[in-house]
Image (cartoon, rainbow, N blue to C red; front, top):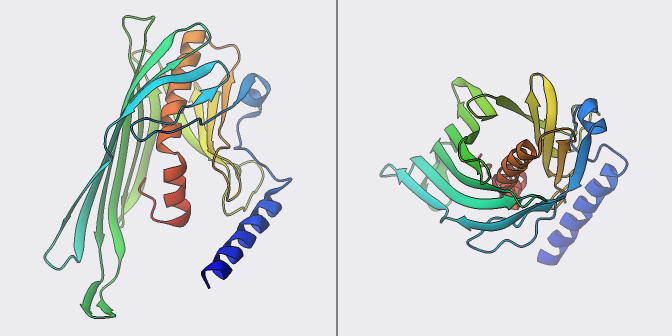
Length: 269
């Protein structure tokens, strides 16, 4: 029976992949960015237990990283019908470019989920419902360049949900002088794509103009390892390095673990 289920799942995924062929395979980005950018394929490399993914794209590569333990704490009432869960994940890494300059990145992600759960009155008989009441996700990263003594960029990606309130979401990259808005994009915006698993990513926008983009999932059920980066060609090299570092941080928190939870389980972000 297990082999039959596995076979049916494989057939299902192959059909999804076949349907995807010839459709919009990458995220939808602005035409101006597409025509005036360097498009870079991302190699994930190897991920050891205490390191982030060993990203490499174009002249940019991770040359050192360290992760803290991913911790999870849960509080619940006596019956376990109400629970609050907190998840925390910290990491740091260094990203270099062709000029041997380095971006030094420190990041932290915090997720809090409040939910009600059904209660097993006796074997096989449950009362109540399973429902997420609230969820917040806050990711912050600080980026500093080794060739600049002053100036730190801050990357923020935050979401909040409450069943009785409107959801809120903010995402930006900012220093003392500039603010870059980060918008979530997929392969649907420009093609009417109705694929169950679209390509997913972010577009970086400054003064209403796209200056870069990152794709952390390709189209189809096998979207892992289809990461892409677009960097506007005429940007300053230091600024490109900042953008590349921010994109690497986003790819880390939206990596295969995140996609697996989003597609096949509960999404923690």
